[in-house]
Every structure is written in structure tokens, then in C-alpha cells.
Length: 202
Image 1: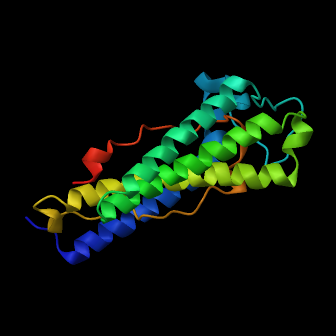
Image 2: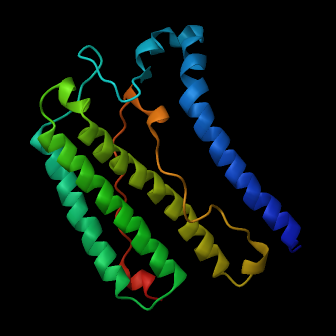
């Protein structure tokens, strides 16, 4: 049974609500809830809010060549994928794939730069320059997640019954913001392999 336009709109808006509510829950409520669970009593050090103000006791920023060299290698790979995919025939799927790969390229480039050059201990991380570069790093990888959902939506729309399938997620989401900043857990940037250009050109 085909969904009505009203139902599709409701699902679309519901996906937005779920994404925003999940973000707020994770940022502001999840750490305190974890601390109250008796079998997770040691989680007090798991989420340590910092609001972009770092200290010596909780800050562990990896400045080894293994980290920033890997970032730069991924940046080259993502950039190559973006350029190669952009040469395919114009389509929404191509454009969103280029957007995904570009976001990943910018993110790991900024991350590599930060890991390589901000080596002065926690004091260097408290500089405005680091805050701006790290916001770009995390913000673009957040937008990449939205592109992944948008690509999934477009793939489903290309199916024969696409009129029954609502969008999974909109193409653009707000970037990561300082209120979600924590010294721990500091998660690494995901680095999915770019899809084969031959698969994207169809």
C-alpha cells in the first residue's frame, strides 16, 4: 500500500525530531544517566565535559606521526574519490557522493593539521585557532553523516516504487557545536572507503 504525501511528510519530520532529540540526549543527559548506574560506577571519567577549555589532568591529544599521517593519507584518498566521482554524469546521487567525500577530505585534513602542529600541550588546545580548526574538523564529519543518509534516500528513490519511500534524512545538518565537546571520549573520525566511480556513474 502506497504511503500518502501526508504520511511521507510526517515520517520526514519525525526523522528530524529523532535526530535532534538523540543529539541533545547524548550531549546533555546520557553522561549523567550513565554515572547513576551502579554497574557502571567507573564511568565518571568516561564523559568529561570541557567546553573547549582543556586541562592537564584530562587532556590526552595524540600528536604522533601515525595519527596525522593517517589523516593526510585518508584526505588524499577522499579527495581523489571526490574528483573522480565529479567527472561522472550529473545526477543527485553523484552530487551527494561528492559532498560526502569532500566533507571527509576537509575533516581529516583539518584533523591532521591539528594533530601535527598543536603540540604545545593542553595550552595549545585552548587557542582560538585550534577551536576553529577543530570545529571545522568535527563539523564536516557530522555533515558527512547527513550525506550518507541522503545518499541512501536517493538510492531508494531510484527504485521502481520510489513514490512510496520517504527521505531518510535531509542532505544538510547543522555542524557539530562546542556544547557537544568532551575531553573524553574523544572519538576518531570514521573513514569509509569511497564508492567505486563505476558504481556511481550509472
